[in-house]
Length: 247
Image 1 (cartoon, rainbow, N blue to C red):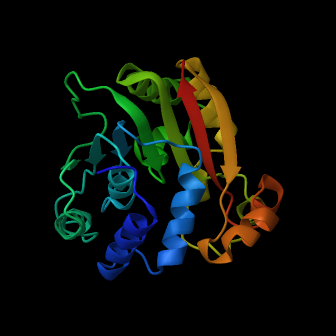
Image 2: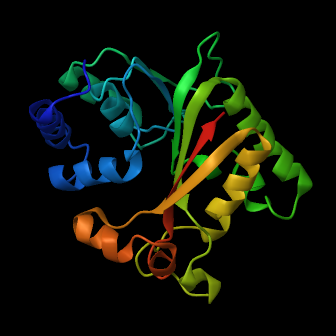
């Protein structure tokens, strides 16, 4: 599939919504725009680590990616239903170059395949939750994540982009001992700020960090303009997107 004209994108978004992948077409489009601004998928090999039902993977394919791999290690007995949702979306969209592999990143063997775009959206802390918690206090935990990023570096092409989306633990409410009224279930101590991931990635050969702060999709572009910075986000959800490159 080519990079997608306006009608193809609209058709893709409509199918995603009709299959229950997202509540609103406008919100989904805005979310894609927030995350993938300045990202060209044309002819690229894409790896998403912890891709769930494939909402981002299928978008990469629709925008012209060559091959897309979704690592989703859904545990036996899990009620998330990601794998079934992925298969349903794949059938509905008629996309054949997106593959779901039920594996952790640590166990995944890409053989001789190299990637141009590697996405970890709300999954970076799950690669090793305990190590993520202790990242700034335990040299061993730092080395665990350093080994993870070295492996990402080894399986990526020159000029590859790494995209990490997550909540920073630097948020007003948990820092004063209160529950965040917007994200009530987030365990903030299990997350790290973007500068921590930046430092680790730089040690592993990535450069040119660019951080943006995401806002609620329903706020649209005006909301991004007003609230899409680290100062306002500190009092909201502290959610960021970090992009770095392999040079």
